[in-house]
Length: 383
Image (cartoon, rainbow, N blue to C red; front, side, top):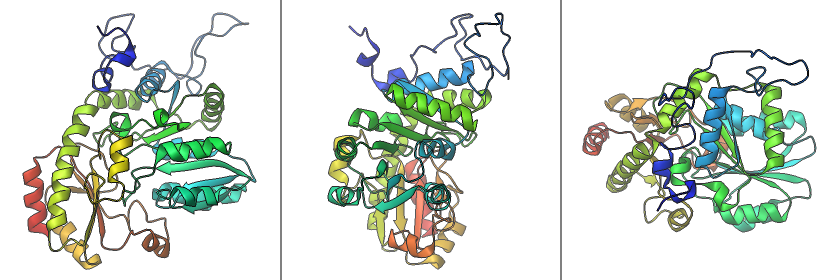
């Protein structure tokens, strides 16, 4: 008999949690509380809420839900994925050293190289698929190890458990960007990470209609530090957007399952196409991280990248496809084709991009909910 939350699958927990209905009215939807301030009845003791930057009932519901899904203790909702990541980086101080995965999202690269450096935070980019390289790069002042797995856009797989153990041994905070897989497919806190961050704009929201970020921790001290920073910076998620994210979450398992199945079929097809030089997808058995992905996650996800000969070939494909949206972002019900060199990684110098395999011929495809055969047919005519 199922009696405890942990006995339930994540598919069920997406729908059945402490906010499945409003305890005051029975409404099967979290109320949207737009209030910016809250009346206090006592001069000496304020109520749970006083000013919406510090706390809002709708935002609190989302934060509790994501914490439960990631098997964490406390969650935090931010105005964007980069707000969540940047606030997490603010746990660092001048003189600290950040160890960060080399093929990181362009916005995280920009924050690291152009903002943290001005604040006196040192950094080293390292290939985190190689555990020995991580150990060799740790310094006495290393305070944080930042992972992104699968990485964007070359889909490298970082061994989270092993890196988290190294992090703990050296007294560092370990952080994992879990945007590509969501808690449906990967739960980094269970693997030993200290903080998990998301761009909830992507698969968690899932409908290209809201920008949001989330962070989850499983440590009271870290939670207090993040709460202080969240309140200090004020980059909070508004109640309407919180509600949209919660609505998107209800179908997240079904969307992830369908899109991942389609992505694998597409990746296998692209791998055989004569005009495709290389396919990056951890669901392919020839991917270097294939076995590690199977061990630490419940699936390979719905994002893949493929490399064509050069920019001219990319241009022809982009101008010929009819089904995928050609746009920044990923993780939506509609398939999204992106050009990392000019979109997600435009902030990265060309030499740095090429060093990481982000060539001018690389395209990233976030697979949506269209019929897979229709997507294949469309890519066939475009190629």
